[in-house]
Length: 609
Ligand SMILES: [Zn+2]
Image 1 (tube, rainbow, N blue to C red):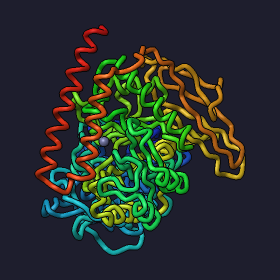
Image 2 (cartoon, rainbow, N blue to C red):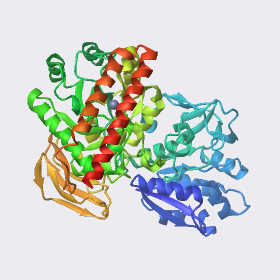
Image 3 (spheres, rainbow, N blue to C red):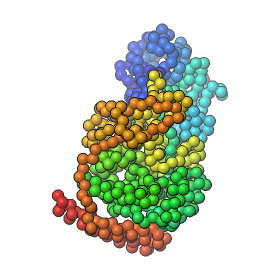
Image 4 (cartoon, protein in one colour):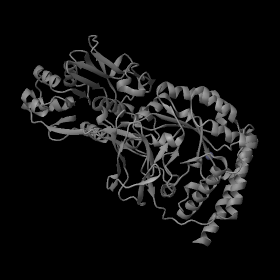
C-alpha cells in the first residue's frame, strides 16, 4: 500500500512534512502531480490507484488550487470516496472551501471548522479507540495548542462517525467509514518537522502536530510501517548498598511493594560497593529475579566521573568497574547487566564511545545531552526507542516520578521507548507513591511487561513486515532479543541503524554469545538475517574492538578520595537526610572531597601525559 500525495507545482509544506513523517515510519509515498481538469475524471483516479488499496492524502488547499474559484463538484467527492481504501484529510483551515470539502467528504457528519475557544481546554481521547489511539485511549490532558488546533463541529449523528480526539464538545480527530473507504479527519493546521528541537519540552507543545498523524498512519498501514515491538517498564533505584536498610529503603518492604503492585526494580549499583552487600539482601535478589535486578551505576560515583573526555581515564575506570562486578558475580552468583546508568546524570560523548567499545549494551540517563554540550534532541529522536547521536551508542531516556504523567507514558510507548522511572532512597519515604505510579503505568498499558533493565532495552525494538513475509526488526540496544512466538518458522532481518563512518568499527556479531557470520555492514547500518524455528528465542549482539589504552589503577589519591566521598554519601543518605541542617554540612564536605579528587587527578594526568 502507498500514501498518494497530490500536488500542483510542488508539495505543500504540510504535505512535505507528512511525507517525511510517513517515510520515517517506513511507509512508501507516491507524490502525484496534478494539472487541473483531470481531477474530475474517474479514469484518472482509476489509473492512479487501480487496485483501490492505497491511501490518499487530502490537503484541501491543493484541491482549491486545482479547481480555482469553481465549486467543489459532487463528482470529485464521489470519486475520492470510492477510489481509495483510506483518505487522510489534514492541514485544514477555516476557509469556506475547506469547510465545504470536509462536510461533503463526511456526508454532513462534520459541518464546520472552528478555532479553539479557550487555551485551558484539554484533549480527550476516546475510551474505545485503542485500535487507533493505542495507549492514549481514555486519557485527558492539556493544555491544547491554540495556534495549531482547529475543531470540527458535528453535523447529524451517525454511527459511521467515530470521535477519536475531542476538545470540549467538538472533534479534533475523527474517523468516518463510508462503504469501502475510511476517512480520517485531523484538525491540526500543521505537521511537526522531525528535525524540530524540542528537548525536554512538555508533550502538549507538539502533541497535536505529531501524534494524531502517527496514529492515523499506523492505523492505515498496520504491519507495513515501523511500530513498537513490545511495551516494557522498569523502576530504577539509584545508589543503594545492598543492605537491609539504606536511607529510606527497606529491602523487605520494597520486595513486598514490587509484588503487590506488580513492578520490577533495577538497582543502579555502584561497583565501588562490590564487597559490602548483606548476604540476606543478596539472597532476596536471587530469590526474586522477576522483581529485583542490578545494573552499573558508574564506578566510584565520584563527581561527574563519566563526564570526563579522557579516553584513558574512562577506559581505566570502566575496566575497574567491570573487574569489581566480575568478582561480585563470582562471589554472589548475581549478574550485573551491562547497562550503564550515569551517576548524577553526567556523561560525555567520549564515555559513550568507551562504553560501546567495551561492549556495554546501552546507557540510560534522565538528561538527554552530554554534560558539557547542552543540545535539544529532536522530535525524530524522541520518536524512536533510543537516542543514537552520541557515538552511535544507544541512550535510553528515563523520567522522574513527578514527571511521569499518563500521557508521557503513552507517548513513550507510541515511540517504542521503554517506560523507565528513576527513584532514589528518599522516594521511599512515601512508598505508596511508587505503587501508585506502577498502577498508573499498568492502567495506561494493561499488557505492559515489567522486567530488568537489560531485558527492557533489548526488547525495545521497532518491527515492520515486508510483502515477502520477512519481519524486519530495527534494533537500538547493542544486544537485542528476537522471539518467534508463532507456530511456524519465521525469517527475521535485524538492523542496527549505525553510521558507516562511526569512529569505532564493528568487529563482529554474536548470536547467543557465539560468532555469527551472516551479517552485512554498509552505509545504512548493520544487518543480520536469521530464520528462527517456532517458539525459539535468540539474542543478537554487536561486538566492538576496544582501541583505547587503560592504566593499571586510577591511583591511591583517587581511590582514597573516592572512598571518602562514598562514605560521606552514605552518612548523608542513612543519617542526615532527615535533618536539613546536617544535610547541608554533609553536602559541603562531599563537594570538598570531590574537589580534592579532581585536583589530584589533574596532577596525575599531567604526569601521565
Ligand atoms: Zn547516583
